[in-house]
Image 1 (cartoon, helix red, strand yellow):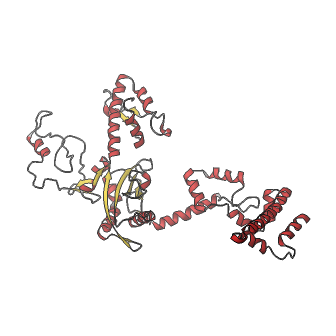
Image 2 (spheres, rainbow, N blue to C red):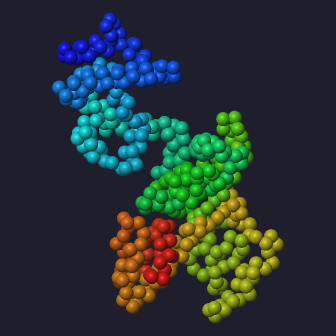
Image 3 (cartoon, rainbow, N blue to C red):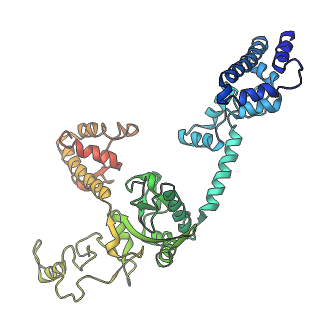
Length: 435
């Protein structure tokens, strides 16, 4: 301690009044005229303080030495300099999907938690602190985006469309890419979280900087529900969206003093398109339903096949020909159908990825039936299981499911193809010859 006192005395000078001269020389050593002298003084101060700290740590240990050397306020400032913002730790835990038990084990082994224990260095958040910050952030997001339960017959939640658009506009403003006219794509997907009986509605920006319309990360969720993909359910789910969307198209939106106009297009798979199109006077009407005598076109009255005229199979009658050729229709395009999302047919797109995936499912189903008949279905499944994400490798892609008591031969309707993602479908296409 005598050596420490003498070192402190040398730092403070002969008068031992203050550390201000050394502090000032350490901070303000950038004077060009006296830079060599200041650098020398700065090195002297640094080496002296370092020598004192090293002596104390050698005597009582690194952690205890620093804690006892500095005042509590100074030591706390030192620990705070090692921290990252709290939201970064929360983001890390959510992104890595680290369980609470694993996080607690990390704190126990490293002694870096802000537990209040004198033996811990308060750097990382504890489990309870993470839960509190998560709740606070989620409450702020819930309030900002106005997340509420929708008035439906099934569990559902939605956000305010205006709030979502404001968020998207300000995000584009960060890149200097916001324009007065903005276009968004409305998407409806089933099983968004991989579960059963789920529907999600979202909007995707078109021609936005740093936003790919084909990426799932570009989707702004608008509504989600636990319900079956039925017309009555979808009609309830998109009711609020239609009201907000129509108001925006008519009045626009003013964000931070700047006015914006919006255009909406719709991208659907074929199943969702048929569910959202119905006749004005017939709620039970299904476009493209099962059977022969059904309508399947949004532009004309064509039917799949006539059954009432009594002609032989595969024979086209005059009624069949008239329906398919759209003969004698004054308007040219049928006007008895409505679209539940209240957009023109010219603003509706079929998702090419879903169409490709559906075609691939049909192709694999036919291939599976042929393989079953020749006894090579297991080999086909082994080949298919080699493609796709690693967590789906080894799964059976094609199965034969016979109905209870079925005595007829296995047909195409007995072949079930497991659903797969777009990237898996791409790998199937790229390796079609090998398959």
